[in-house]
Length: 264
Image (cartoon, rainbow, N blue to C red):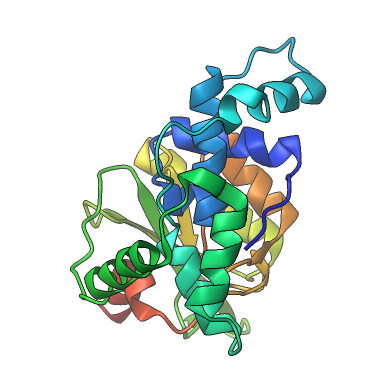
């Protein structure tokens, strides 16, 4: 799993989302990076004294010099393998083995790398722990689950006016189950973004994470690891100080709050 340097825009996103209180996994999803890369950049930033907000006078070259400086690359103890990334590599590539991943890990970390047996022990312990299905715990203000109801609703006019059909937009806060719903004529981008704005206005606040159910209007390409977001939607989330992390395809637990309200 050799790593490459990413753009300074991504580094700034990692610092911003981490400062907002998101977990490493959530930061990785929001910045479109692996959890290992996020941990690496956060550790390097802490070792170099770089924190969010980054001073305005720092350009990309200055930020890069500080994050990738020698002080950040001098380990003082063993580096824990990133088990989630290891697991993904084993699942995505049938010919990849733990031996191969350990060799790449050792080449990257040198004297700070665990032995092969310890590397395997850490991974297998992580795998046993992550296999346990746990009830989701929601933190107040952290997540807002968003979806459209599956069936449109009719709007009847007076006398002989034609029946109009509307889509029902639903936004549910994870911790409180506080729900906002409205009907819009379409599921177009203006309606989608406008519904978000009105939902946040009604709630009196904005979440750290927007969790949509991969609608085409907001998510250009649904993917478990690297979804492609609609640019305006991503900018709306940034405007409110949050990030969009779509529910994983075919993972109903990721969007349980919104799905429950749509059945009510």
